[in-house]
Length: 236
Image (cartoon, rainbow, N blue to C red; front, side, top):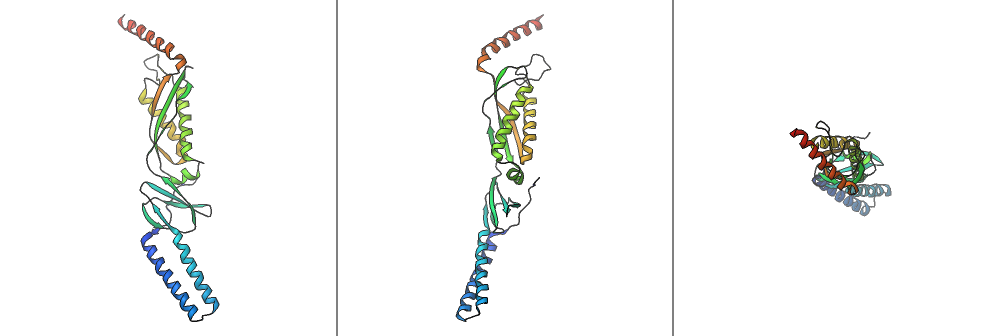
């Protein structure tokens, strides 16, 4: 498993000034060598030096706040740059993938599933998340944003089938009445699924919960009847 590590970087401004000075020196030396009719091998070496310095100018990168850049060298992960600013690194590190460190929201679509009692319900959830390990997010899964979507919806479906929509006993957990327990269970399950992608789940909660339209009226009448029976029992 690939873990995030810091990449080699140097201050951009200082490196830029050094490279400009080297480029001017090598170009001036080349002109002097040509004028002085220096041996061809010396001129060739100086031309190569000019080209090498020019290649080094390709190593500059700018990192914005709440952003990271994942660097690769010949297909191998070399590190991540998280510190905002203008930096220089190995010019051969390609590609340099940008990964947002901002907090993001994902709201699932309204999923139609059967609850623990077999009743069809509609359920949706909101997950607040962010990337904490850029290497895992980039290399452990194909598309970490789509991975958040798929795994969140899978967790919501699993949650819906594990509990009844409504409780028929005081000590029975249900999707409708046990909001704190359900929210905790949802966050824990989504976090377990997304951990391998280097993603932290900050918050997870249900955003929609209802019986499916085809049974909504029947279940409403059932709830009303149950409430009447419960009230009569307490009176007696």
